[in-house]
Amino acid sequence: MRRTIIAANWKMNNLMKDAITFFSEFGDTALKSENEVIIAPAYPYIPLASALSKNRNIEIAAQDVYPKAEGAFTGMVGGKMLADIGVSAVIIGHSERRRIFGEALELIREKVKFVQENGLHLIFCVGETLPERENGSMFDVLKEQIYSAFDDNLTLAPEKITVAYEPVWAIGTGVTATPEQAVEMHAFIRKILKERYGYEDSRILYGGSVKPENIQGLLSHEDIDGALVGGASLKASSFMKLVNFQAVK
Ligand code: PGA
Image 1 (cartoon, rainbow, N blue to C red):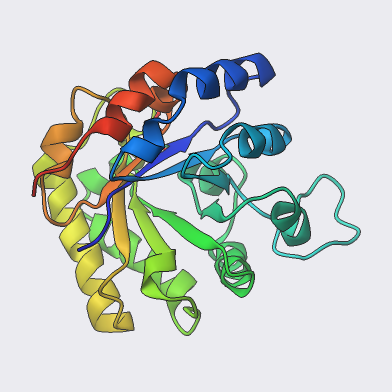
Image 2: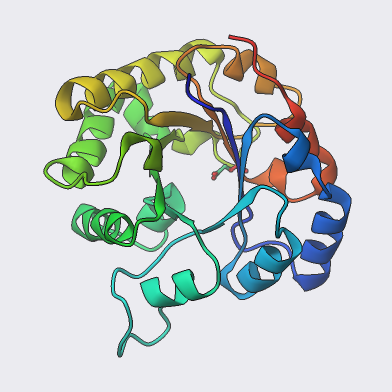
């Protein structure tokens, strides 16, 4: 059985006061839930989030990492720093990093390697744009994103490798992939993980406008092991509903 993950990606949102309010309202929600709960605040708030979520069964993630331990890399945050502030998971390859910051496949591959070398839980994002879906190339796009990052580059146990399928056209748009569209892509990713890498127990999350109103339709499917949530994770009231959701497969 793969344990369901409900992960929050706060992106460049939630100031200190918002984080304090969030964790005070969120309380022991994760302790009572059967789901694995991950929260990725912006870098400056990670120590605060770590402190406020202590002993509450919440894994604190970073939204990115620069793939070096330390050194002369102005503006970057490296691996030693993440370990130092209590981070245990890292999101890599988010479409906003790929598109807005021009992260190339080679850099993403290095980051995938680095996260594993540091024993951190890897949350690796893939997904196609709207034109790529419309011209039917979404399977090729996913293959390229996965092969370039994972071929001869997977070293951690399957439980520490999580893939998030996030169609770019569904992120922050309010448009969610239909459960059928998500299931098709998840099955495709599952097959690659199993046949190409021998990884059967990795989790595959769906991301893209997940909210309390649509989580049931998505997570009731066998191949959808959880959700990576942006907008609906910013306030404790809606994220709690997602964390409390009990998937019946
Ligand atoms: P969204 O973001 O839930 O706001 O669509 C998801 C993500 O980018 O991980």
